[in-house]
Image 1: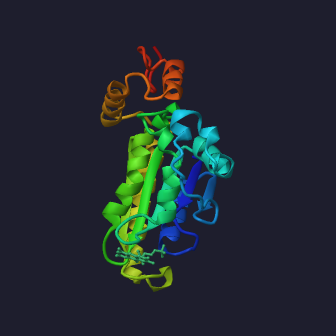
Image 2: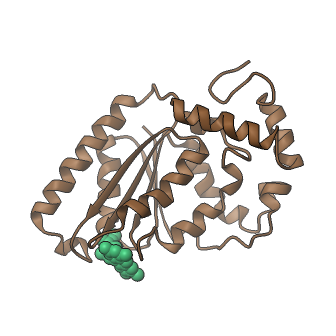
Length: 231
Ligand SMILES: Cc1cc2nc3c(=O)[nH]c(=O)nc-3n(C[C@H](O)[C@H](O)[C@H](O)COP(=O)(O)O)c2cc1C
């Protein structure tokens, strides 16, 4: 399996260790990016990606290596420490750049056949909301199978995570890796994803902008074709 990890921080702490261990256990090549080290731009709200073309985004070139890695990956891992109950600002700023890829706009049909993982660690609480911040993007990109790993590590560094906690983490990661391997090569979009796509299709009525309209027509989604089946 080809994996990509987007780390929502630029240091190698608890979250980094869990994400890298999971990817290693799943097996296959792994490409990792750290934020803001590898991408630090904020969306400027120009709407060019929605209305015209994502290539008009002022950060398109800067983002391209990550976009290409996401496109190549079978498994997308988004990992972030919990900062004030949510994913880091760096992760949020990164995800904002792919709003045009949400199902309502121009989802990449390949996404419907990928797997996703969201990982967050907190000292005490907040992993549920941080994981939701990241899982929302994965599911609206079209990914059905999303593993969620949230751990309250009771520490602020990997070195000080209690050993019994590390054992618990190792078991959790092992179980998730096995489930991911089991699904490898036979990922199909689930009922919820298909229903969501069909709802978005009704809301957008074949595309909210001229660019979206042309995209939906080219994909055949205004007719009988769907991302998971050709007409
Ligand atoms: C700015 C900031 C905000 C944080 N907010 C929370 C929080 O809301 N809840 C919590 O339990 N821990 C919070 N923490 C602690 C970290 O989430 C926790 O130590 C995490 O495991 C760090 O992961 P890392 O080792 O990958 O950096 C915060 C830490 C920082 C630096």
